[in-house]
Length: 310
Picture (cartoon, one colour):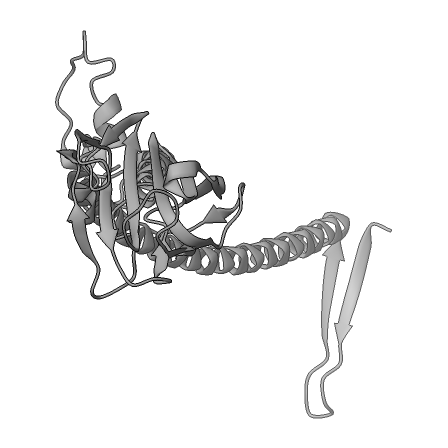
């Protein structure tokens, strides 16, 4: 088919028109139609792809905005934590000052001198240090107050160790205080010392001899109390000392309570400061109701009076 005639028939009032097309005209029209359809298809695919990419970009922008907001919130919280860390370090310093312990530097100060030799280079500007933002954030690792996120982590680990040392020290001090005889051994408002520590004339023999404790006079059956925490080492009759209680308090302290009328503890009992261990009497070699009270420090008799005054 070399030629084709197209006849256009309009409405009755119109004029019939004919159009004769050669073969190359038909080929050109076919090619043009194919190109047009392919172009429309590619254009539609491109538009659909752009719409999809725009939707993904919008989702990414929303996710980034949320992530940025979360990061800003986290940065603010960490900056507040950094301020609390500074306060915690100052608080520990005050405790160490009160307890007489040596002060501890911050973990960052302990490691700040490492690797200082042979350093150099051009000084960085603020924007270079913070990635061009000029502000402190989690993105560049800084959290304000001179802290970085990594240094805060190191400081937390370091403070665990320093506070453990501090707690151990305070615990030892508390245990030592609990083991130190520091109250009167008799709970009686009218108790008084009839004989002190040192040389004296024996009230029975009349001879001069060394008195190794203090005699505290009180009414018969007045409560005799432990002057410190400890364990009963002896609770038995002991000749001239009558009914006797000996306590081992640890940290080198031992105490003795003699001439009691009745013992209320037995060997091996653990007692606390202020617990009643006996009742006042005049058993053994005694001229009247009282407690003969002794304090020993690492096996040496010491003057109990200075402990009674505390």
